[in-house]
Structures are given as C-alpha cells and as structure tokens.
Length: 110
Image (tube, rainbow, N blue to C red; front, top):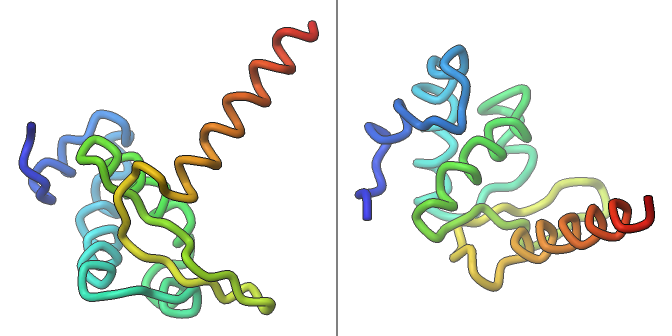
C-alpha cells in the first residue's frame, strides 16, 4: 500500500495534469486543515472558491487509502461540517452506492 502523502497526490492519475497547481496549493491547505479537525463550509470557501471541486479531488485521492471526507452535520443555512473519516461506512460511500444502484435501474429499464 502506498504511503499517504501529498508527494503521491502530485502524480495522482485520477486528477488531470492541468489541476496539479491547485492540488499543490488549495487541496493541500484543505487537507492539512481537515487533519487538524472539522471544517465548516464557510472555512472552506475562504480557502478555495470552488471548494466542492477540491473536496472531490481529495475524496478521489483518499479513497485509495480507505479514507474520505464526509459531511457530518448539515446546517439549515447550508453551512455544513466536513471531517476526515474512514471510507467504509461513511455517508459518502452510501451516496456512491445509491448513485450506482440508480444507474443500474435506469440502464435496466432501457
């Protein structure tokens, strides 16, 4: 198993080459902040205008290591809490499974 580091992230094949500068700066900043503890949407917006894209990149990267970024609390005002979690049993895993099931249902109906 590869060691989890941002040196590996620089050569992540899931992420297009043109995204590398963002991965080096914004994504690293978000990951380091998440390692220190949960972040709220307002914190993420201050770190990256398109924080959802950075979260997606990190989720794709971290999945290889059995981790993910999960929404652990949803605020009524859209200010959600994000935390590093194990992928197995995460809300994100359940969401991916539901999407996969929905795609299969749509494909089977055609």
